[in-house]
Length: 138
Image 1: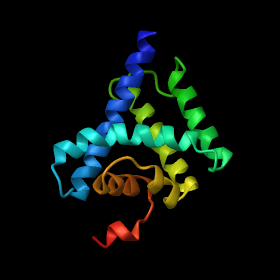
Image 2: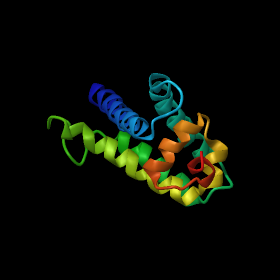
Image 3: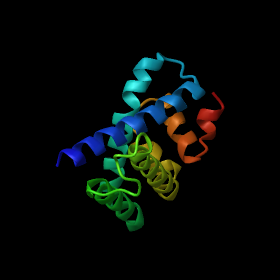
Image 4: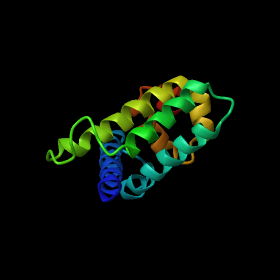
């Protein structure tokens, strides 16, 4: 039970660090600390909102369900006792699934469900490979 909770916490922390790194590259207009603190909860809210949207393809919701199931399993691709890499596989899988889900859902759906700032959305676009010409022009 504790391994599961620690694994989830570390995976979320590593995902947060990756998003903070992207924020540094994007150079948000507001305070970096504020955006860094907001990006992970915004991504989690986005995932929840996308999973609840019945207008999206079933495959999107299935992928999100499989991601949650993977994170709940007590075993990983790389065992958690391997330093750094043990928890990095969770963060990599979360990022890969998010990238696929966001691409399949489409820019309009993602933008419509995004609860955060434009800078946070720009980070999400960069992570997932989406292009938002409206944000790129700024």
